[in-house]
Amino acid sequence: MKPLICFLISICTIFSACRDYEAEKKIDPHLRVKMEELIRSGQTDKKLLILFKVIEELNEAHQIVLQKKGIHIQANIRQIYTAVASTKSIYELAKMRFVIYIEPSKEMKRKMLIGTD
Image (cartoon, rainbow, N blue to C red):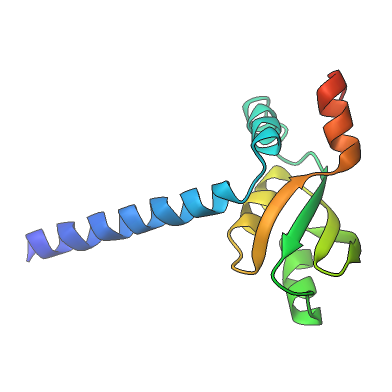
């Protein structure tokens, strides 16, 4: 019985790690670095302006779920959305199946390049 439980736990752990890896791949590397800096400095609630692309335009139900997770949509053009979200919320967004990619907004990219906050 114990070997079966250990096997199931190891499979679940591997599957969970793969899912996190898949979610992290959706986040732009520069944005991921910025998020890690915020986590290390204890600023996980700091709001970031992001762009994200989805498979198809979001319906009202999707938008309600996003809002409950702390992702506040500012605007969209078809499947590309601008939103304000915390580091934790961005990770939650990346885990969603309908999300293709998440990157910093143009303004945030510019600030990251010149080194201002």
